[in-house]
Structure formats: structure tokens, C-alpha cells
Image (tube, rainbow, N blue to C red; front, side, top):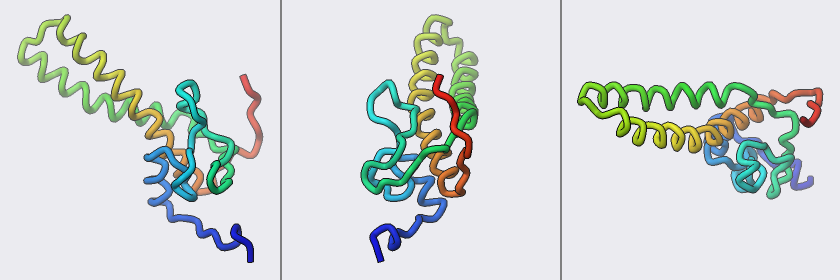
Length: 133
């Protein structure tokens, strides 16, 4: 019996938690995304630790959708409260533009990791390769 035969796949919840940490849904130690700031949203081809393949996992529009949903539910109520308290427009822009961008930059890769891990756990892979643009 080899090492690969003894590997136990984690349950779906554990895989999602590992994806939220942007780590491999199988082992939890390797990276889910390619290294470097330019590749922050590109899935790695395989886990460097356990060798699990991530080819064919495409989250597409789900991570931006959920990011907009979450960020909107945080920022819009704060903007409404600021409007009720007569916050000036320049101050509102200075506060809410960086808040919106920061939350988006934090949540988009995190949610993409969770969705990619969910797809991995459910075996949802694209069987036809997509051409590189």
C-alpha cells in the first residue's frame, strides 16, 4: 500500500475552511494559489506539498458575486449612517473608497479559495481545457 492509497480526503467543511485560508483543500499545508502578487487569483496547477491537482477547477463569477454581496452589506449601511450624521462628501469618499477597495482585496481571494475548495471537494472540474488568453 503506497502513501497515495492511504490518503483520506477531508470532508467538505474542512476543505472549505482550508480554502478560506488559501491553502490546499487536501492537505491544508500547500498553497492553493500561485505565488506572487500578480497571481493572487490564479490557482496553482498542483499542491507543492501533497501533489493534489487543481487543473479544471474554475470558480468563474461566483467569487466576485459573493465579494460584492458581502462588501455591499458592510459598506452601504455604514454609508447610510454617515449620511444621517451629515458626513461631508470629501470625507465620505476618503473613508469609504479605501474601505471598499480594502475589503474587496481581502475578500476576493479568500472567497475564491473557499469556492475552489468546495468545487474540489464536490469533484466539480471542467473537463475541457480553456485556451490561455
